[in-house]
Length: 513
Image 1 (cartoon, one colour):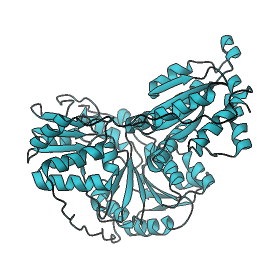
Image 2: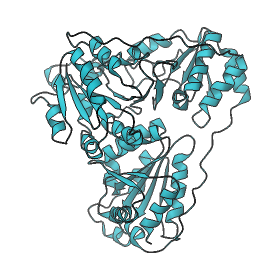
Image 3: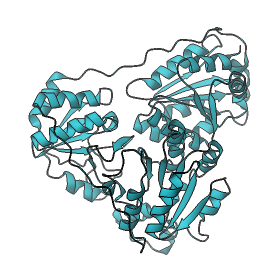
Image 4: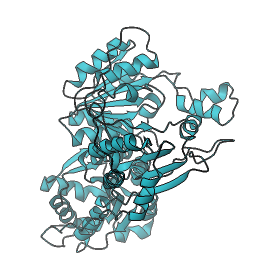
């Protein structure tokens, strides 16, 4: 048994059965070991950003670490944008990155670069394997680092010769113990409970939004105290729809966010940071809460958010109350495809058990508001602001939950960053319905251009247009094995989503705006 096989057997023994990969020559020993052992399902992505975005979606839905196989520093750099998103989401991912054989490094071959330095930018934990005797144990340490609380990005760098050399233990290494949540502070709990009232807000994120029970207790707390409850920061995953308490999110536009938060004088944070603007703007603050707002961090990310919610409910004596029933959204009539009709068509068409992946950015702005009465769903969104995650994220989510339909809400400009993920969806026969909002421009950047006080001329605006030539996403998808069609009527969109999401395999709908 060589080092690569020893590592794979140990990972499999620890519960890893999927690997998202874009390997190169330095990883061929792992490709061979994957084939010989048949212990993992290896999923090929045609670009490293697809690999890491898919790993992110898989881990969010599978609730366990995803493993990637990447090639040297350039491959890791290509993967970086979606590793950044995963890190902001605190998604557990273990990257296996090949490096040159140790004897080869001194010669400065064309692909030689600083792999540990590249990994450090996007990772919470980095180690280079030093021998075949330690490779399995190193892998278990890396897996434990990813699997701890909160989730982390861990990167294990493996020189090629350690992968192909024989040696190491014949028995798989045992999984190391992952970090457990840090205990809550009793004094902070008391202060948080005493602070709640009509001028207070509870800002939640992370695991709280993934727990229907925690969401229900937040509803009880709000009803008992008059405090507002909102979702803050990166939306890794939220359980939504009929039977769930719906949290309003802090708006993205800075002026809207400042207005929404202006009335609060106390803020309790549960797996959330004090809300901050995405960017700095002239004559606008960076922090969104009022300057005189007292901020109380009840549970940090390394603590148990759902447990903090339960403790807070008990501290104030919040009694369980039934959630109000919410009617499902009615399907739209035929007519113009304005944003309201577009949002209605999607919200009304969401199937039972859907996983919604949201990189819509400036289109379909009210889908979330209109889908509170839709069948229960999981909602995944962009977390770190690096666009190009939507289609890969949907791919990984579909791998984790092959029995659930995935609906991907996708801006057209962002889609072009990682469109290759459609090929992986076709190859894996994944039930993903990708809805492209074809407004033929970087609309979000147009908004930002005016917010920084610019008075753009035609050359500036030309850099934000996706025309000359116009993109045809149906043809692009067909070239990667995914059927599709264009729609321009909201009723047609509703019926198309309903029909294609009920069928196996991927489909792309290009909505002409």
